Each structure stands twice: as C-alpha cells, then as structure tokens.
Amino acid sequence: MSNFNTTLVVMAAGMGSRFGGLKQLEPIGANGEVLLDYSVYDAQKAGFNKVVFVIKHAIEKDFREMVGKRIEKKIDVDYAFQELDKLPAGFSVPAGREKPWGTGHAVLCCKEFVHQPFAAINADDFYGPSAYRQINNCLANQTGNYCMVGFRLKNTLTDNGTVSRGVCETDGNNHLTNITEITNIKDCAYENSEGNKVILPPDTVVSMNMWGFTTDLFGYLEDGFNKFLNEKINVPKSEYFLPFQIDELIKNGKKKVDVLVAEDKWYGMTYQEDKPVVKAAIAEMTKNGLYDGI
Image 1 (cartoon, rainbow, N blue to C red):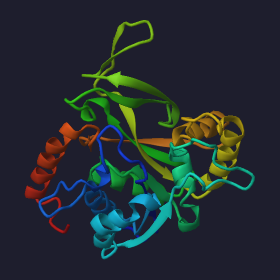
Image 2: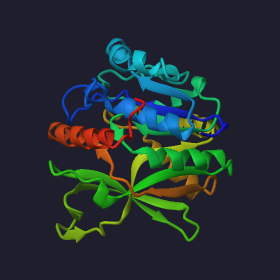
Image 3: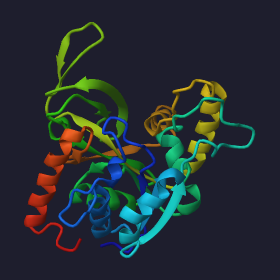
Image 4: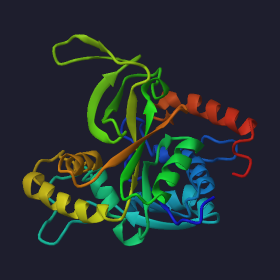
C-alpha cells in the first residue's frame, strides 16, 4: 500500500447493448458480488483510496442498491453522472440523439470529483490484481506521463464470438505511438478490408481501456469535447472516444503514455455466454485465497 493518493474512475454508464441488460450489475460471486466488487477490491489493495462511478440517473437506484452501498462501506465513493445534456455552454442536445457522447465525455463528467492522479477503467472488465498494482505504481512515480495497462491478445479472447481490440504500437522507450482498432477478431485472426485473413501474434499487446492520468487531462478533454461538438454534434451516432483524445495528445507531442503489460488473463462479459466462464474463473481465484477479504 502506498501513501500516495490515487482515484479509480469507473465508466459504468453504458447499458451493455450486446450483453442485453445492465451487465455491470450481473452477480458473479458466491455472495452476489458483481465484477465491480473485484475491481474495487484489487484497486484498493494496490493503493487506490477513492472510487468515482460514472453512471446515469436512470440506473442510479439499482446501482447504489446492488453495488454502491456495499462498496461505500470499504472506500470513499463519489457518483458522477454522464447525461446527454451535460454539455458545455452554448450547446444543446440535438433532437433524436439517444447515444451517450462516449468515453471521453464519461471521464470529463467526473472532473469535479477527481483531484489527484487517477486510473480509468471499464465497469464490466476484470483486469486482475497485478494490473492495478502496475498502474498505481506508475501514477505514484509522478513522471508527468500518462500510462496504460495492455494485455496480451491471447489473454483477452472469448469463445463466444468476435471481439474488437486496440492493437498498441510503442517506441524504443515503451511509450505508446499508436492504437489501431481492429474489429471482428476470432482466434487471433481477422479479415482485412481486402477480405484476406490476417493472423495477429498471440502476444500482441492490446488496450483494454485501462488508463492512468494526471488531472491535466480534464483541460484537454474540455477542449477536445468542444471541438468534437462543433464538428459532429448533429451526427446521431458520433462519439467522443477517450483513446482518440489520447492519440491526438501523443501525435501533437503534448503527452507521453507509458505502456505497462499485464500477463494475467483478462475477463469480460461481452456476450451472455461469457458469464459462466467469468464465474468459474472468479470461483477458482477465490478458492485460491485471492479474494478472502471481499
């Protein structure tokens, strides 16, 4: 445990379209624990001392009941709300807009609650204890760089369908230079635009949306979101994605991003059929004493 203060930002406003239902609230532990219980437990053990959940008002009651009230007993918790109308002055929600504004907007929505270096994660992903230790150590080093924890592609696949993954490229100093989003990956392979099968090395490092930031990110997000709205507010499905903003900061030479690699298996609930796999994995880890204190 470090004495350095870090916050965990959990992006939990998405409604889990492919999974069908609020996948963040699906019990997977023996005592009704959800994936988030394990994420917060791992983060707290790694040294994080505050959690900010980014949710929607529509799920607040269920979320507090099924997740919040349990976690609030263990760690300092705040709730930030990602709503369509949470827009900068001068902008209003276009008629017919239903889709949230994206992960960049989700993080921006928690600005008032985050006053120290922070990690941002997906609510429905299981990253494992070492990923939280790595990212917390990186934040505690206070280099001014951002960071991300990548996973080996082979450790992030599902047997129940295809996945999209952000393939990471780094320079000689292990700084992120590029993330290429590749869709429809199955068994480490995908079809390129010409229809040819491309095999990716199983050890390829991919981003699973686990990021580490300093609070200067919020200024960049405010500028970036304004720019996005000026250009795309009337495109119904447009989204302001966090990785796009990070990519721009890297390309403009404003920030460096240290790439850390977790060798653990990543678990997520992309498809309903993934749930038994995740439950079995968590049960095994619990049996081995990893979650005795949960």
